[in-house]
Figure 1 (spheres, rainbow, N blue to C red):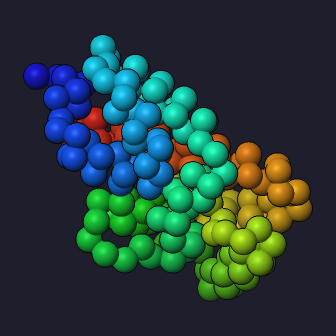
Figure 2 (figure 1 turned 90 degrees about the horizontal axis):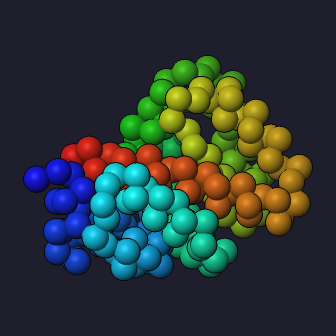
Figure 3 (figure 1 turned 135 degrees about the vertical axis):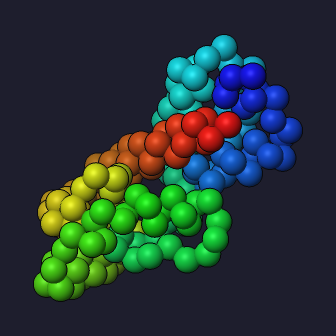
Length: 168
């Protein structure tokens, strides 16, 4: 049985559990589940991408609620927490104390400005790169930043969904 065939055959509860670890927005999980069965991996990923692009701001905020601050270690033994730790691992060890302190300050300033955590696709990025992006994004207006946050959330969900498919 291929990964996609296994994905298509998953019981609804198990599918929801796996998808919720990718993106904690029930509308996203429901949209993907409703499109089953999929013919191939590309179809699963395209459906996930479209579902993420269609999320309302309230649904994006639901997804954000499951993400720790950049530079903070996700706690717990959930699949989502483990993925978050892995996604931030390269960045976590690549910065000096000054950069780490600056990132904490940028996180705080971002949250004060926008009312939610700073979200960025951290895989493969250093803390210096993340800090530069945070500082740059502080200059955005609310509408521009919401669009960026939605895109970053979509990219993270896509990476995590690929991990789910790889594990099936």
